Length: 346
Image (tube, rainbow, N blue to C red; front, side):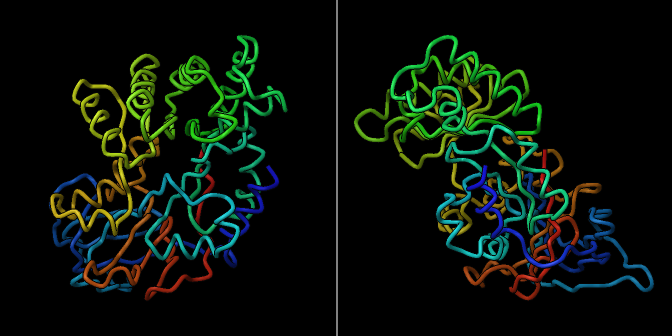
């Protein structure tokens, strides 16, 4: 718990700020659903998107002309850099200037199981961007097994781990993360992870995982992940770029198994000439929002929280021109503001 608070201290920037009420005009809107872009105006009021389309600014309303730029949903990062790396960088500035408005923390499997205790301080002192939490497989395994974790867990220990995961989900975790390449999660039997996945299924949570192996054992490792998604009937997100693993996952998806492996880096996706920019944006916004259960995030639509990015794709990787988090400008002219408009989501 203490290390996570230290990590996220870097996500806090300056004083809280009120949401901006304005209209973005003349931008090319990509809404995060994969639809083709359209030239449209976007009205932001009281932290929400209130209109998208041929909106006419009202008298006295603030106008921001973004002609020639893309207007997209804020990016959602489910692979936020490791805790040790965050501690060495101005984390919020690094994320927000890249267009990230929501960071799902704990993908390395070290997220706390006491989610409410962790999140409460951020209700009082908001973060610079939205944060969501994954309970950590490593955390619950250490909590239940203590230093004697270098073995398979007993049925009783798996049951007690399951109770911790269920409690974390009740407190607002969005899922469980397991790094099967590193201890202590790597020492778990497949039956242990399947049991925890079945707990997630009851709450509609997502399992974010790294495969046990990505070399000679990758076939067995990916079969385990596919089996968990199928047998537990849950959403599984595999953090891998291994071509063999991705190919097997694609085959499973064709059979309607709810498993995926994808990359949400804009620079990587824009280099892939086989996909449109609309599809690239969807992969970083609407798709991760849907897979993580982040309701209303990841799309530009009336009534959604105003997490919005404005940028010139030809000017990348210089960064984003404007970034709004819950309707407040967090990046202006490419530079982070002192606003702290994020929310601790659960």
